[in-house]
Image: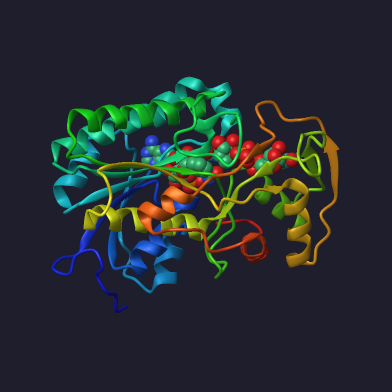
Length: 352
Ligand code: NAD
Ligand code: WQD
């Protein structure tokens, strides 16, 4: 595969991608490889499968890239990776992300997400690797006082998962204050959905999906009976929750833009940006869009509001556009089309 090297013409750029076998990580690997970046992956396959990596390699026509199977809390493994590989930066996806599960098992989330991040940062520091792109979340905004949401809005968390994201943002802020040579990007994802247009990789949640679009996809493919819409009495145009859904490929491309901006030093060493489309869609709008592109009817019933849900949440993405030269290009038709394409081609996901 002939690739250019927009990052550095003289040597292959190696980026350590923690959690690279996961939903967003695997899609980001595709974008990195097609931009001439050599990814090194560490993943413990807690919520993914090696199959996703095999498919990324086949999709990109690349040699299988270097995988270290293991846990980011394993300092010995991290030391080996940084010693064996010439790593210039880290994209840090590894983490547990299920809100409900975090309420049931807070210590597991704090140990994995916060403890794991501290171990990672200690290894980076020991090996003079000081560039990190972190997977944060719009969940750090809690219930916003208004929308669209800007990066300087107040932060709050209403569950242990959201608190892990807040804590990690604070850890990274402190680290940069101590040593401004650190290059740190906090990318606050809104609602990632969809799949690579090939249908070869996609979202493969464990068990019954918590999130809307994978749930709709399972209904469409006949694995779930009907969608429960959590609340039809929100102060929104049709009474159902409004969110900023962003195509996972757009999201992945935002990471390449962030790395490139650090490489070219066109941005401050510490930046926080929203990765969203700037447009909110309701649950019913997503259901109808999915029905249009799939030709499937999605049976649904209205149920009580889900604890912790907010009425409306969508981004002001202007800062990401200005700093990173990035904006989302794909709309909900493509999100639903690509989600359906993946699901219909892979009804059992990666068959873990
Ligand atoms: P995912 O579960 O698909 O991917 C996470 C990956 O990290 C998995 O492959 C998992 O096996 C791995 N992992 C978890 N803990 C690990 C550990 N201790 N050591 C090594 N590997 C570990 O999740 P995703 O949707 O790809 O999300 C990636 C990141 O983005 C997460 O940090 C998540 O909190 C964040 N995020 C996700 C969303 C979303 O809606 N998907 C939204 C905002 C933020
Ligand atoms: C979207 C809308 C629901 C399922 C979550 C996490 C957040 C982040 C992104 C990690 C809401 C409604 C959903 C269903 C429904 N993940 N819904 N029936 O809650 O905005 O964000 O994923 O960082 O932390 O909280 O996404 O897809 O769960 O819900 O009616 O079966 O769909 O009420 O309005 P959410 P979601």
